Image 1 (cartoon, rainbow, N blue to C red):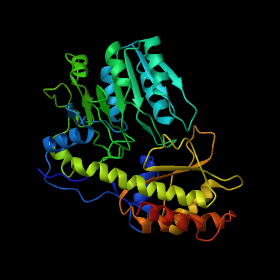
Image 2: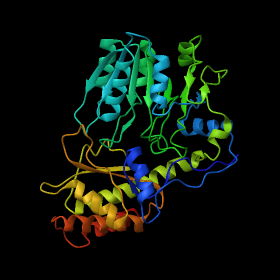
Image 3: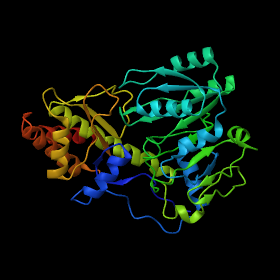
Image 4: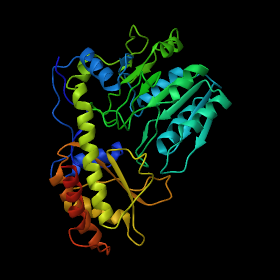
Length: 380
């Protein structure tokens, strides 16, 4: 079977948050927002097989039938966690804060470690904490769109297996954008929530898990009420949507995944080069930056919200602003597949230059687009 791209397509730059992204899709006068037309003929089984290839796993893939306002991450944790069970949640941005809040609400004994925003944890430090604390479960956000950072995971699962710790990873910010090797990294459960990057409806949030997770769920009562009535019980222990609920989804063939990720990453690097040439400063660590995101610090004396408003009203471009929990005022930009190309990057930089100039931040005319062009020339 030939499968195509499940990674998102559409505008070159959008806000990293789902509510802002939806606003972008509705308001963009250029019509560049939204998702690609979906295939009508893919079954649930075909989509699950494609997701397993995308995530490099043999895990079971299911699609919870969710109440409004509940995402799959919360849905899984509600059914998996036991009262007073120790859970370790590393926090380096809002994604980790959300995971810790959910676990605390569910009565878990939550152990947290805090990292400065704009940086991620060294895996050796997390491993040392695992050996010292010996929690029942480790729950990590793979990426954090509030800071544009990517947490390395490849060494954690092996230690979790050694210490009999369940290893859960929220890939909402990375699935389809960053290579994930769930089995090689010994991940027990892969979770997606609101704002996932997969080419699926946002209310359809796939999860994947192994036998260790299934053992935890076996025998637990799952016939809870939902907005659509009682959930259908699946043989593997999780309720799921019917196959026609995921018609139209599609994923990249193995050989295309790396190419698409590399392509978006290349355009993000070009965009970053241009923004720096305009006089802006990268926020956070460049070594752990999410490859399809660029976060830059708002210059002193410039109203970040005014620049965002100008980009939206005058150029049809939506970008993310400062997250509520972050002390530094930043702009957050995400480069998507589809129309992400040299021309679109140049247009974005020209628009940014004009919006900055209108707010009193002057830079050399055309310097951003020129820097991006030079970056592309170096790759040729």
